[in-house]
Length: 425
Image (cartoon, rainbow, N blue to C red; front, side, top):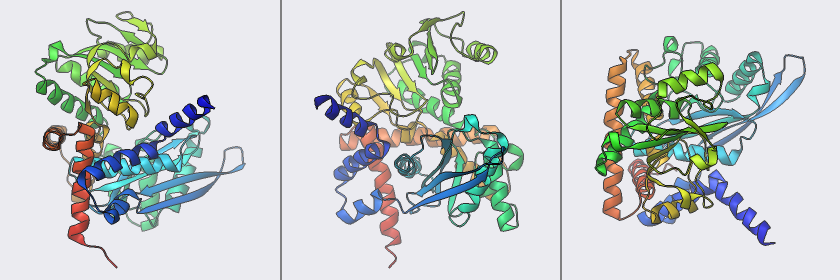
């Protein structure tokens, strides 16, 4: 019975919607929001479930389930990615949509939060099958997405090609090119320079600011990166360029460590040639779980949710935890990290670089005028640095940790927009 109770408790801890709800309630309580406003901010504005019939390459008819959740449109159109995975759930999509609302509000861009997903396994589907799923899913959502309503973007197992299919399908229905219906598109279809690197670049900016806050010189900063994909790989590359030492890199198939620093470019080349980061000649292989607990100044979890939990938070030996992924830390783990003096840069701030440059892409599409990469990066740096210090100041003013401060700041901005607009009845 005890084991069953513990398992049930862990299941609740790892449920993303319950995590999102817990953090919302904590921030709402500190802001003393009235009951009506709490209800309005906590519940999604719209949830859509679609069943997508698709003819597979072998002639069989299969039906896939898809979701699109629009959490809030109080500050602007809903904004958020679409993921394809066999374990997509409505709870997960709800949580991610709410996080997008708070993320956009923290960096003060005029969006609300949305998220979508399709339950499928892309690894066993052909490109043509994925295209059919994407186009039919888009057609089913045609009345609830659009450049002034809800703007999708890539997420897990989707990419710029997926966005091109969505943009084309939407444009065919509207009988005109509508490039601003999605972001994360190919450059020659209205994409933005700097978009693929934006999330990792944003992480590097806020990490730099945190190191300054503690008086840690980049050359004295040991960085451990968990996840060496688009976010972690780019974050590692940029932090190394600042002079930090990337001492550990953790991937799904193993980890490598070198206290003197890992050459990120060489490790990337090694993975391209071998398919793995392991057996890299300039670093030692390590157990991937143990590598998470190496002493370091910065731990950058940039892969998936629920990496730091109540079961392992006490083993984290980083001074700064910069959350490149969405939801890598569970609410019970927050209390342990806070007690141990770990400075957390919460996900809704740390990885907001992606949605910020998505916003830039949307602006450029609507203007029909495109910026060079330096301008994109400069404007991203300005927003990320200002937002970091907004959160740190809010934390000090209200005597709360950074995550609670970020949520309070975001909730305050969204509820202010709702009150100014009034309630339509």
